[in-house]
Length: 180
Image (tube, rainbow, N blue to C red; front, side):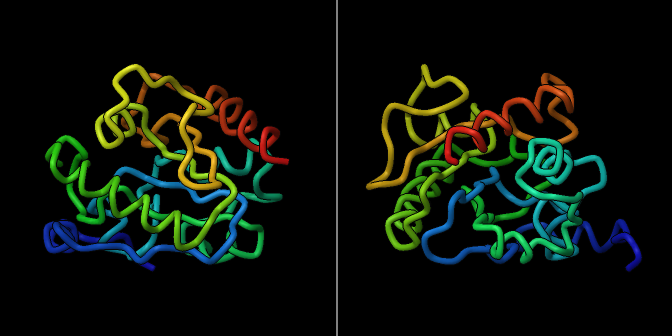
């Protein structure tokens, strides 16, 4: 498949990417919102340079490096993907506080419906905003949703330079070990 063109990316603004979800997953990974590249190709964490897929592999969630086009293979492993806000943007900075609040309500309903063992939110600032937890830190959160525990991991976007690939692998591995 050819990478999306600049026009494809412009047309992707506001589009959504379907959830990869089923009942009673081990982990439901929750991104902030789709980027334009992901929306243009219709798959989660698809932009080259996004470190989600390498982090899953290097932390032991997957036995090989999956591509975004293999995202449905995660369901067989007990994992899924959703987003806090469904609207694709060039940057999460384009999202409003209201969108985060509405997104958290929708996400809570999704967790109640699908009952994953763990909801892993990818992005500490997004989690703090959406769930009104200004002091939240990475890792296991005190408050879950129904019977699901909530865990916060760093945003794996290549734009998030605070975390190197080894840091992401270590933090993702901590979650994997905790839920085994």
